[in-house]
Image (cartoon, rainbow, N blue to C red):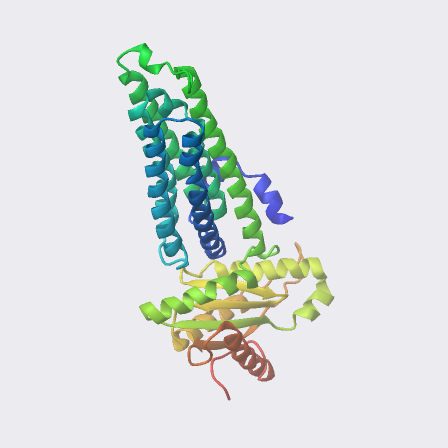
Length: 382
């Protein structure tokens, strides 16, 4: 509910900024699955497009138009299979969504130009081919990335706008625009098509924005605004992959507030929620871009650091001292509440090769810290 209220308060500028921002890890993972789905759909649609030249020939269309259509759909089918092969290698090619969206739009433009070269009104008034722009824009919704939608929509508007301008202005006589099969293209009906492309782009972008907010809510803790376990499950494999291929270190610190149930009993659950937000604010104020604080559940958190275990211990212990030195005031004039946490630290791969093993060993060290008196950080077995 908190995420929904925040989304409703966003200004149009903030919505556009959200659409243009790079998606987080969960949305990138969802988008990678969407790109594969788009590639599969494209392959199926490309196969069905082979029926269009056949239907044109059987319906009495000209041989030239049939051959142009056949050449176009064969071209599309070849690239559709190429994109499908690349999309199966999830997240390997970060440029792929933009490249395939550009292909979908540009393929439509090329076919329109080929038709116009044969019969000028066909290039401007072919509804079937023009709908390729609409399909290209709509398919971007499955990628869950607003940047791709705006890119595809903008590219379609530019390319079709150029085609309209060149063909209408380049017609050497009004008679060339007259067609009994396609009708006579006019500036008015072409502007209407451009407006429709803009409308489709805006609607698709809003669908993507809505999907992004829903995915964002699934990976965000509603109380603290921190990433949650879902986010961590998606992020961890990529962090491990980065360590394997780029080097560096990866450390997890499992943090648990000391005697927090007693705090809830003494000052109430609402004040306890504010106390958690107070601790989170104290920690996140000094975390850097290579540190991620995640709320697992209740008063338990994970701090992910791209640091060796020794350096991570120093960092977490400094955070422990900072939290201890910043008491929480339940309300104005009330006695401040002293808050502390205990932590267990593990490093990849020595303490585990996956998230489950790392958290299990971190919890063992956390329990050691609790047994030894709390308000301390443990990085090795005793």
